Image (cartoon, rainbow, N blue to C red):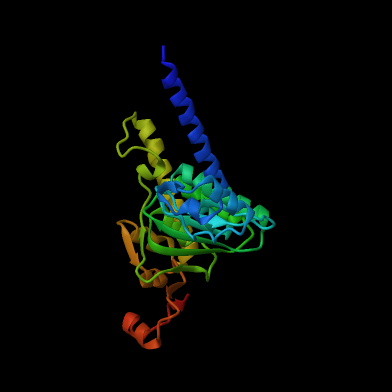
Amino acid sequence: SRRPGELKGRVMMGSSHLVAIAALAATVGSADAFSQPHGFVRTSLKAGAADLRGARPALSALRMGGGVPRVPYKAPGEQGYQFMDIWSRLQRERIMYIGQDLDDEFANQMVAVLLTLSNEDNKAGVQMYFNCPGGEVRAGLAVYDTMNNCGFDITTLNLGIAASISGWLCGAGTPGKRMALPNARFLLQNPKLEDMGLSQQLYAQASDVKIEANEILRMRDKVYRGLMRFTDRDYETIRKDLTRDLYLTAPEAVEYGLIDKVLLPLQRTDEEIKKYIGESQANFGRI
């Protein structure tokens, strides 16, 4: 039912789209491909072909579009660069960043990454950076068991907040390599219903409620005994401390035994450090 002129216009529009796509493909790997918002390219097909024949401009170090930032990466033995999300790029350097609630899905990803890194090199250490508001205890225990079964050292660093099971995992790193930045905080808590993947209110028969209550008590016992290993404190002290939420600053976490050092930037002078933390520097280290 279309007029011949209309059909011809649509065909010509389709060919112009093909030219634009060809220009985009020709500039992949060049700075032009990432200089415009959302990766749109404003270049001609001739310019793209020239880039393929000659030397390409240097890649930009970071692509900040919508969503996760992407950075260039050149794999060993490869001639060209590939762009990947920044979290995968960090994992190539054996750095894991925990920056969200530690639920089952995220814990599965962490376990998979740990197993992959262990398969690649079972001796080189791994660094875990925490800025995590909490998570589920069962998910954290899966990560903890995987950490213990890997042969390499694991350095833990609290960048901002390590709450609930993430604070517990921060203390589960290799002794001597558990650290935090000066303004970081820790929050240690008793496992609750929501930490077990359940709703805050449980409606069931009395026998079913008893089963869930016993399971929560069993999980609390695991958390207490884990903190006993991490901090060298006795069971009753930890049980009393976790009767209510236990907030710890970075220096307090060192005194509690949860971590080993508080890191300060290397460029600070001794006078600046004294102004920042006082005369005593026993629990502070340098990055």
